[in-house]
Image (cartoon, rainbow, N blue to C red):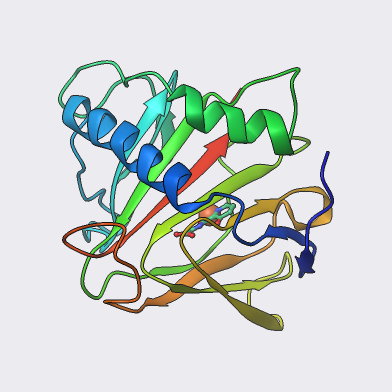
Length: 202
Ligand code: MD6
Ligand code: FE
């Protein structure tokens, strides 16, 4: 597997992994995913809608409501999640593995003012598999720390086309998005940011 250009708190950072044409093609694929499985704002376990709107592709989609965080096999409308686009799977094959494909591609959309608080990705069964993230659209400040809440953190700007992989000792690192800067990318005609995360679920 290719060496990352940098490591941030143990996460492998591949800035500019996708060129402009690759990013635009991916946006086209995601339009089809969102047409089949519209974005929605999950409720936190405390009953408040998240500022990030989400949907998923794959065998499982990530979901949250008052009953907590979990993976479900249907969109809230009752329809199956659409398949993960081949172009997305190709990124996983290049950077993670040929032996097992992800079960879920979570699609996060950040409009005006959306952010994501520090969290761990730990709803999956096997932490031996990394989580791979792809950034598209406006620049975002990503914050990452250790495996304990309240520890030291560092931040990195994620730009359109960047790939970041949380694996190994960083698999359970706390991380989040402090802010997204409007107008920093022309990829999405109405602005905003999309983040894809690929996960092996079970
Ligand atoms: C985001 N990313 O970039 C939020 N999770 O919008 C994540 O929550 C994330 O970047 C697991 C692994 C990589 C990530
Ligand atoms: Fe995460």
